[in-house]
Amino acid sequence: MPSHLSADHPAAQPPPRGSVDALISQTRRLRGEVDAVRRDAPADGADPEGRWQRALCDLAVHQLNDLDEHLAQLRDGPPPVPVEHEAAALTVRAVPTAPGQGSLLSRVGSAEWNLLTDEASWSGELYQILGRDPAAPPLTLDELPSVVLDEDRPRLTAMVTDCLIDAKPIDGEFRIVRPDGGVRTVHMMGEPVLDADGSTASMWAVLRDVSELRRSQRTVSETRDSLQHQRHFAQTEHRLAVELQEAVLPPWRGSLRLPHQGPETLDLAARYLPSSTSALIGGDWYDALELPGGETLLSVGDLTGHGVTVTSGMAMMIGALRGMAVAGTEPGQLMAWLNQLLDASVQPALGSAVCCRYRPETRTLTWAQAGHPAPLLFRNGTGRMLTPPDGVLLGATSGADYGQAEEALEPGDLLLLHTDGLVPRRWGSPGSGDAAESAGDTAAVSRLLDLAPRFGEARAAQDCVRTVVEEFGETEREDDACVLIARVAT
View 1 (tube, rainbow, N blue to C red):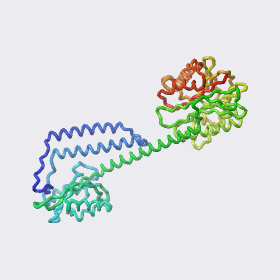
View 2: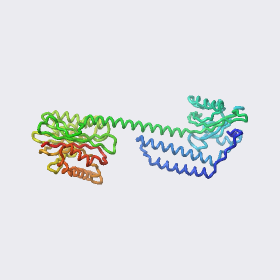
View 3: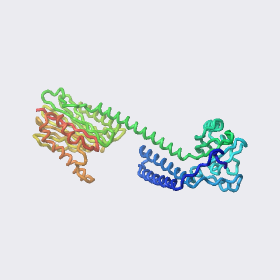
View 4: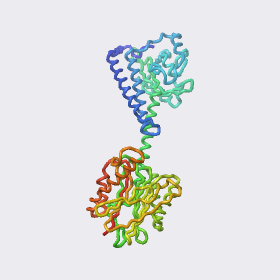
């Protein structure tokens, strides 16, 4: 094939072999490091971020493979030029390789089109790229668009016209259709070859099959879009969950005294503590409601899971609990009906709860629990856990019965209700299994009971909540939590 350089341009000298070998070594070392990163990337196909990471690594490895082979070609020099009309040499290449297979050389071909004689000269590799019979004559410039996808023909025509008329270099891509129907993406780079008087005598070009590279880039783009969509969805879900939670949970910023209780009041304060390891809102909740007749409903609970679905389920639970309590339902029966409600829900869930009904005229606390930590009672500088009546997790068993217990309170008593994520697990017992979990729960209760002296010095329920937050709220928290404190007025 004639040189693509015009006669008045000297031939470029090849770079020193040692410097190219050093570049090849660096490329292969980098490829190995990227490949190691790819192996460490999450393999879970359901994770958008993991798919995006692996797609980026695949693209980088693909590009480094090509760079390695480019450098090897640069080191070894150009392939031998086939003898003009040597049919035997072309016949050796008569079996085209499958798209995307073979060495880099099978994906890079060259051509020259003589404008004076209207003759074309192709390398054997170009026949392979286009999937054409090497025994067939090469396509002329007028015939070349016939193998190009219809929508890409104007692009090819514009590039060739600019090169032949305005002597502009060619640098662009188009898609070709092989005889077997396969579509490949080809990157074409070329330039005009000038004769002695500066006129364009021919056009020289190198065509590279970049189908696999573009496929890798599309995969990166698609996984990036999927990741962005997933993150946008998560942000939207988080915002909705926060708005729903804020609309349901009482926005207490200081001690709350229920307005219609007269001289026998409860000093109330509560706080929701979000997880430090999850951006999603959980199903933990607290509530206090003044009932007809001056009684007070106190409750905390937790639905398993995170996100809008769980938060909406939590809102449903609070609404149902309030409605049944206003109708006069006692805590034990209330737990049974909540269990039935969860069991019959379209989206079944598990939950735990504790529900207390306080009668100020007798200072009596009637309460029930469903697989939930029992309330803690603090009196005269010491604390203890109330003995829980029978109760299983909500939604776990159809038709479950729930026991009920009573506790006589005194002026100045402090009642602490909480969800099980309040005390971080690192303060529990190490190990796993039921025994370790039970020991961890005991250790968590002990940590809370140790706050009794500080509660005794507090002036209001809000001071006690602040003490709990100072002790447990600013640490690494694996789960959401709620704390509700009620102090019997003196």
